[in-house]
Image (cartoon, rainbow, N blue to C red; front, side, top):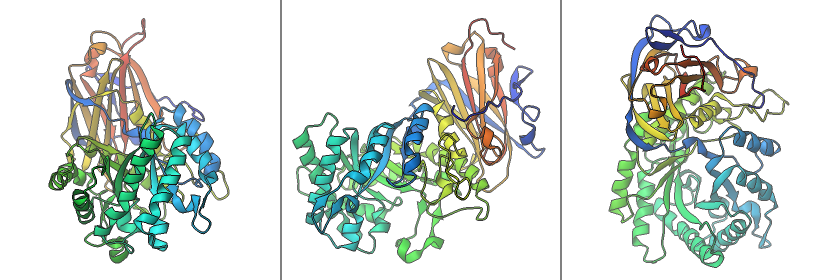
Length: 509
């Protein structure tokens, strides 16, 4: 890893057949006497299907945001195993299209899309026409040729553009210009343009169209949108995916009328999102949409907008976000056909969202090879195996406590556990109880690697030299020692155990 300094702690102790990660192995994060016991039960014989690689669904900011770092950022993320399945990118129509002259200038986005085409297999383009609609009063008929011209040209230049998201948070950005029942009329020119482009270009990867990219799971806006879809008599109408964001919810109304103090955050209880797919499918059925229509959560996070828990010192918030984002993702993983997108590689103004360290001091260029704790979470998740298996925690209540994801494939197994506490301080001593180890690990020495993120480990603000994801122990053990592992988890700490066959001749403890 570029810029990484190796940091090896003492190997995990093997005591009475159980491998532990106690105070002796990590003095700076020793388990306090008040740490509660917790058990994570893993059954490798019970498959939960292929793991959605959520670390490969991600966002970048607009073309001008930290453009000088972008080439190096792309190279670094690809090196770190974070090449994307889908990255979400931004095209502002008013930047390309000059309304006064009717001309188009693609220069502002060419380098941007070229870089990001190297970072991801597919690109999802937010095709943003808010300036024309909100500020200039453009009609659907007026925006259609602009949308089609831009997307046709960009699709020809960048074939891995696959998804078009019609709006970005229209229930906020267009709330003063449109009522909910007016939004679908502005979606029609998008699907018409996509259909025409696909017929004309016959691309190997056809464009898909969806939206409406709501700022939250907003049933009044969603119902109006789907009701108009049902009433649309066109045989070519299409919604290839539904999209919205997951930070929290406003009460009835919108951000302009109620303001940020009315906002209800998911960070206090990420499990609040657990029933959204069920609710959405009920709306699909009501308005004649296929229940299996993919749902893209195209942004999510703990800190929407300029929000925080620690106003004067963002360092604790970085760690809260690192544990909080996978907690939100956890609840979406249990909802079929759902694809949560991380937000964001670098944010223009709000550092608590950054996956790469960006704010290092006045006038100091940001490094291009250094993760924040949240970025390390994505790196940690990239080390999980392909198939998810059953893992249950007895210390998870109202979205806070000990989370777990367990995985396996032909190369071994990996278990990720974390203690999301938000602003609380409860510590846990977690026993990971394993059943039916994968065949690749049975009856032979096992290489056991431990990786960790906490207040002092894999944390730029504790030590820049060890900012990136740290391997805190590596040892070779016998399979019977894997029946129980003990991990100490302070508040908002994350831990990964990777189990793989040991190299021939390695001695097991």
